[in-house]
Every structure is written in structure tokens, then in C-alpha cells.
Image (cartoon, rainbow, N blue to C red; front, side, top):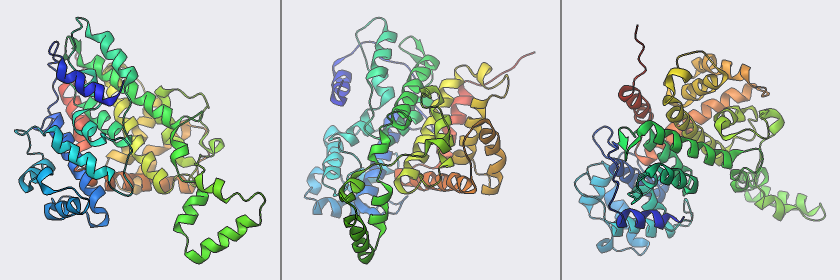
Length: 398
């Protein structure tokens, strides 16, 4: 099922509209997504000139003009600033204006994704919107299950927003309890993360730059000449192969089973810092983002069974959950992280080193630095978790 099919299907169908609540902190789901998309586009357009938290409207419009996109087809100053600040609640974004986002993104020398409607999907699509799209079917649950199986995100950012959306889902969903829908969506998110990071055929590893390519990209021109000569001394010359090769961790250090299931993908991600040499550059950033995605999805899935998962006994799975939560979502000083990480480390068979501690710290910084680029903060992500806890509390009586 293509992404455009989801959009067309929503437009055509008129039956079984969900009464689920998507609101959070006064803004509906689409307004939050619109703000995130606008902030991310600004970061892509401006690069080092981007200042998170500021609209920089004139600069953005100037860049759009240089890309060949006239202001007539783009956004007015008022529209742009409302989008960034989540004040567009009374002005649902027109498809044409979102199309300008995709058009501008496609013209960049290094776009964040290749999908031609990535921003359209970022604003108006997503896993939750797909699951709850109107349908003529009387029994919507089998439809939701099939939609979950078919759902594919455009990027890791899209999947991260899916995990945030799922946390905000409460109420009734066309006769299906929201907890059931959250579990279904969270399970799909964990499956997709597993497909990316699995020791057996994980898709993300081919996308990473090889160690050789990282050294080449960072090298001075004189050093590159030396690297070329070293390759010329080897027959056949391996340089071209090394330049396009991906990167994989040393699984003997990470020590997770090759057949680890999607329900344990958070454990896999938690143990990756055991190979500290692997988690560098874009690999570290992707690991940090996907680790939080896994954490949020795991919480959404487990909270439906909260009296079993969170209130009975301390389990290895809870140790990994607490470790990831402490690293990425708490404000505890770095030196206090060790106490939260040690139980997970002791449960695992990973070969931890002093450098592993540093990778958890670097991952925390990478995630915290990324969020302002999309107009979010760690506090807002934590607020999504506490919101669900408040709406569906863990209560003991007697």
C-alpha cells in the first residue's frame, strides 16, 4: 500500500470515524506534526544558519526564492510563523502548501529522504492516521491489523513521530479500546525497528558510511593522497569497495542472539554501546533516535498491561527500559547514570568498556540536540509519557 493510498482513502471514506483523542497540551495531532515539519524544513534549508526557536522567515523565503520557488506559491510570513509556533489550529494546512515543503526539500543537495511526499506524510500521514482512517467496514479491528502490517514509514524521524502519536492516543477508536490500538501500533513500530537493527539482515547497516569512508570524508587532501596510495599497493584496489561499504557492529561485543525478536529490540539497542567504535557520526545519531523510539513504543505496548509489567516484579526487560529512560529522558547528572545502567549491563552478556559509558552520554547529547531542530524538547517527550500515565493511571485499592 503506497503512502498516497492512505491519503486518498481518508478523503473518500465517510463511515466509522474514530472518536479517539489526539489532543495533547492544547494542540491537535496535525498541528504538532505541522510544527515539527516546518521546523525540520527550516533546519534542512538553513543548515548552519538555522537558529532553533526563531522563525527566520525572511531567510527561509530567501532560500526558497534561490531554489526557484516563488513566494506566491510558498508561505506568507504570517502562515510560516503560525506553523512554527503551533498556532495553526484554525487553519488546516492546504495540501499545496505542504507540497512546497516537498518541492523545496527535493531541490536540496543532500535531502533527508528520497520519498517525493515525505513532508506530506510527516504532516498528514503516519501510523496512527493510517490505522484510524475512516472505513466502510463494520468490524474495524481486522482492518486496523492489516493496515499495521502494511505500514512503512518514510524515515526514522517519521517513525519517531509515530511513537509519540501512539502515546497520545486515548479514548475509543471506532469501538476498539485505545489500549488495544496502542499495542497494535507499538508492536508494528518495534517490528520496523527490528527490521532496521537485527543482527540478521538489519537494513540500516548498509546505509551507514564505512569506517574507511568516515576517515576519507574527515581527511585533509594530503592525507587523502596517502590513503589512495595505500589502496593502490593492494591488488585488486579495494578503495571503491571500501568507499561504498556499509558498517556493522562487532556482534561478539554486543552479545545479543542473532535471532533476537522484535519484542527485545530495545535490549539490542541498549547493548550496542558495547561496541563503542561502531557508534560514531551518523550511526550514533540514528542509534539515539531509534533507541528513544523503541523506548516510547515499549512503554505504549506495556502500559496496556501495566499491572503485570510495571507493578509485580523487577524483570530484565524493565532493567533495559529504565536504562534507556535514564539515558535519554531524565535530567539526572551524567555521573548518576551508572546506577541506572548497571542492572541492564549485569543482565546482558555484552562486553562493556569504559568507552561504553561515554557512548551513552554522547547519545543523550545527540538526542537532546536534535529535538530543538524539530521544535521539540526532552520535557515535551516526557510529557507524552506522563500524559498517558495520568489518563490511564496505575491504581491499587485495598
